[in-house]
Image 1 (cartoon, rainbow, N blue to C red):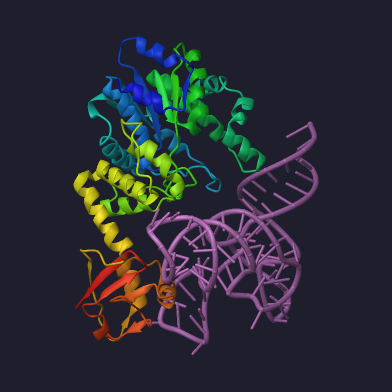
Image 2 (image 1 turned 120 degrees about the horizontal axis):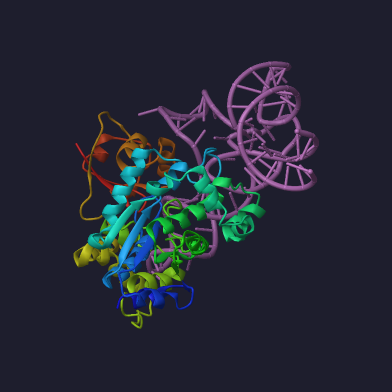
Length: 385
RNA sequence: GGGGGGAUGUCCGAGUGGUUAAAGGAGCUUGGCUGUAAACCAAGUCGCUAUGCGUACGCAGGUUCGAAUCCUGCUCCCCCCA
């Protein structure tokens, strides 16, 4: 049974023996996961958690995805703190759709309920909210690690944020969750559900937490806002290259969480380079198939290891005029952020024409027509016209 | 309600009237080394067809030859007491 797989990978299963009891009920269990609709991109870290949900589905259980639209819509009025920004309804709806599309690459659509928590949170009266709030104490909230840290660091915490755990707990009430899963950083919120559910006459959910995947920087949790993530929709070459860019110290965790699959005892190449290559192949193959993995590796070998131009270089028409002003061209065609940035790159030899560092910001047309223009190691364009 | 402290570039954080586009660090970028990475070395890191010009130190005004630095009002944040 695939639930075994999830069990093995979990960091916590609370309470002890709770999962077995739930499983003994002999009916499809309702396994809940909360989703933040402000950043709908499914990255490898999140995909890992979705895979655990899929483990449950394989055993016939039902997955309930809670899109936190209501929580996101409340947001933070000041706009100054570290809280999540308020998003437009339209953006949220768009995000939810985009998210679902990606999530169903992992989850079985037939065994998945997608719910928005505005459905029930939007109907609570003030009295209902107060009743809900009574199930939690301030002291317990402040025990939570990140609140405790922020509080002692004098970083603002708004009252609304303190309500998040009970709102999330109420989601469990509304959908009658049997199990809720999340990253280890969610432990407190998940446990809040256990406290609140009995107040509404429900059996408390079982809580399962899973390890947090570190990002491509090897330091911090993978997340979109930190820019250290790999999205599952990224093209093969990007994906392969980003995996290769992780520090060696992250190898072991990535291997365990993302590559091993159902063979936990499987050995890996000793040589870190070979090990990482195998990791990159597997991850790319998971999302783009064997063909994609080959393509990604070929690109990596050629461009990064051998320092050559990729096979298919996008074409870029030369603008009118002679000489050609390089900074503008780099901004328009190669994605350089500003002309000032472009000038710096040129100055430092980061811009190459046919492999030779560009000598000046203005180059004669004849030197550029048909030439290969390169910025840094990875951006290329073939100039035409 | 009373009292005190604070808001600086991507982030952290110096700077209390005059080369201050703003120390230092982190991050990031480029180049070098290399086994992808890391470590290490060097440079860069607001914008602009640019040996100059324009913007910039919470917001809006003011004082001054000159302000991130002084004054006034406003907004936001933190702490203590109630």
